[in-house]
Image 1: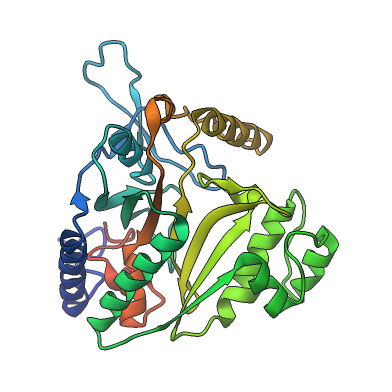
Image 2: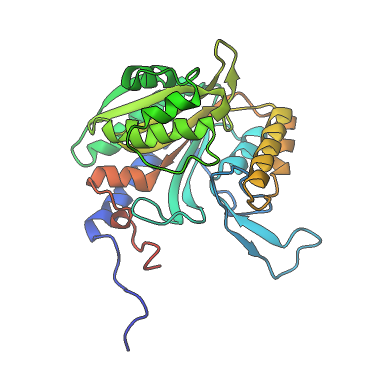
Length: 326
């Protein structure tokens, strides 16, 4: 009898062994620094309100004692980890699977491995240094290294595109895309900045450089603090190895009222785009109200890092079974 789909793994055995070595390195890295490994729920009553991320939902058939039957597969362990931080657990990390609907292709898989960790009393710049140190240790597994380079979001766009991303109007941003053809209908200013990053900037990033870009526009704060200034900036960073985005870190927002307002703003954007409503995480709001300690957190894509270690552009090459074979 022939199989309905290919039964063999999508990744070769050396890639799977490298993944195991990387997992061991991560755990040793944090054990040496006193950062606690934890496990948090994969299923939640709340989804991710971020308009550019789609969550999987499922219906629970058992007893709920009045709780919602609809549960959401996590897109990140972030909210649960912050609840632990508010409860006083201290520095912690999780290495585990997360899920995002609609993301399948050469560099994406609907389920993938994310490493997320938090450091109490740190800001995003100090955490950036630790993230670079971890990635460099990982590169050493395959006899590689990469030179760290740190820049601000504003300086990156100015030096490479000769425009100020904080003040340039939309027409200037559109023209800077050059011959990149796309439908401009409904695109916001932040969308144009994102397109410039993915289509003009990232492809030119040096393969042997770990580029850290920090202090983003306040309109792209996500869950980061905003620092007053002219202009105000979001205290976040992204880390790239060559053209691959590896990590996204924040000096974390601790204000419950501001967090609720950002969730509400996400909801309005989702409604305007015709996207389904997603229940916000009330437990996170309550945890912030109780008191989240000042901290910085970062999420690092383990599969992306493995792709960089192996020099492949196919996520299937680092997964035992990719989406087509699952």
